Image 1: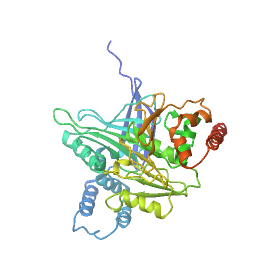
Image 2: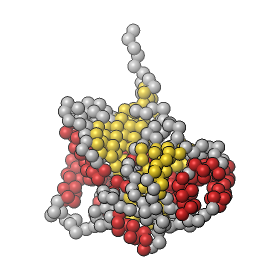
Image 3: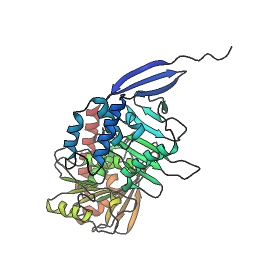
Image 4: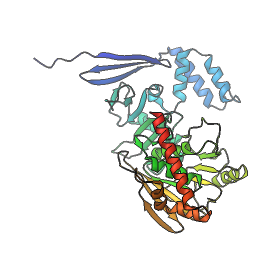
Length: 406
């Protein structure tokens, strides 16, 4: 007898914005099916007419802003609305998958293979096959190109990464024949970090948090290097979380990764449209007495001296910038989240010194290890005992918060 083919078992079924999602299991393998709203030939013509008109110079909606256009489209039947949104989206064929908030990752690997996803309800199944597949290489390349255009600001010759929209972060590798390009989409998740967590799946010691908190307070410039852009962003946001609530913050970013739920948070986006650059942003910071500036350092293409006596400048860049006080700290994040520790390199004047902070270090040991803290205390006529007392109080507070969270 031949092998008996097991029937598919439906293990989950739900609706998302008009799309019917069905997840089945056969022989311990999951499959993810999407069924999009159907339109008649007449409705399909209406969709095409609206999309063509919205993009053409002569369309009847010319002169209307986006909200007005959305209001007009909202008057149409739901299936027509869906397909208009799909055609106007950069995602094309994978659009219905992007609507599902349970989809954490999307893999576009080969034209001859289905699109694969990772689903939040099934963590033990990292690659789930979908019923979506590109009809040819042109369709696949067109969608990858449309996504690439969305993130072009953060691109090299053949590697591209960045935010596509509020929901997805993309990584694209462009390849020539006989190889095809590949695209990886990862859903942005809300930052759940408290003041005890800075990097996903990695917990800092109390001493490390106190050290970072202190160098932020004394306005030492901090550079983040290593890891990937998303990991640096996550850590940068963790640093923002550590800044005392009484402080004023200006965050200067190209991509909106920061948590903006706090009243004290002032955000200025740098872009061609806004007309802002980093020099202008520093001017705004000084004018309004902003104490902290957070920036993705990739924006900066030329040398600039940062006034660390006025501003703590936290940024993400491979090459640290010069500071007027000659002090800075470079945090080297591990490329592997399972790596044991983050490396710290302090720069005082022209000398760079690596330090290792242990979970059992006392406040005095922290002070003795950190040349930045010693130099700052000397420059500002603060005695050693005061700095150590401050470190001890912060460690006690961190320990109290950790117990409270449990």
